[in-house]
Length: 314
Image 1 (cartoon, rainbow, N blue to C red):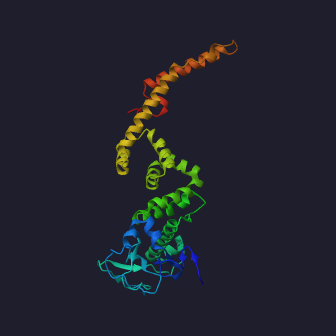
Image 2 (image 1 turned 90 degrees about the vertical axis):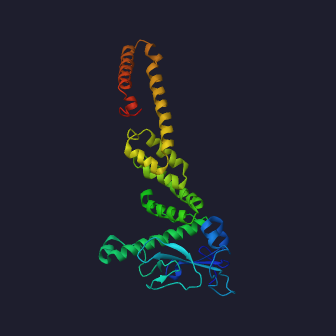
Image 3 (image 1 turned 90 degrees about the horizontal axis):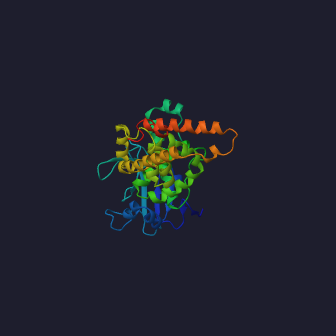
């Protein structure tokens, strides 16, 4: 039956096998893959060494790739075939660089639940991890064709593991720009949940926003973090260094503190002109303003400006 839509194009010249199951064989276009991924651009180049005669000259398919895993590993990578047939069984293939690799088995379909994982042991867990890697590669290849990723629409928390896996392999194939654009569009439906996550999980959210180059998520996490009273602690400083944002945080915090101090000063000097207008309840308003100014003066003197603890301005 003729097909001409993702993931099987009649005029495609690249075959990509993601598992031992024939339904996971994609026929795609070399110019699309090379356009969005420097990994494919390099490996599809005629300068690539090795024997490339894997199929007959009359076939439209000019290149073949298979998703390979180390014998006991769960991190797969697409390997260009150089004259050797794909592996469908559990026998390992010794590649030219002496790394033992196998193709993902297809005997287990779909995610493995906790009960089956306990019954089948480590093998089931490894199969689940490899299945997740296959799913992430499917999402990646779809994104190269500007297809929205099939991520969970129930909540950000449910979509997050798949997003992390997709971003990770997009870095491996150097196509993060197009992938993050598709992921960010998907995340917009969870904006309320994401803003809440930025309040309580600002470090993971900062890391995610930096990987995605997501401006609005980064700003929200930075706002939450900049005013945090622990940001000068050694534990937090080490995390800043790991993300490479320590200098940025210091600059933003300095601006934040100066802004608060200016607001406190202006608030302290502010006099409510309505306090002295009219006779009704004038004394209550005057006492309220006087009490507030006294309290604010005490807070500022003690270093407790805006209730951010005594070290907020350190």
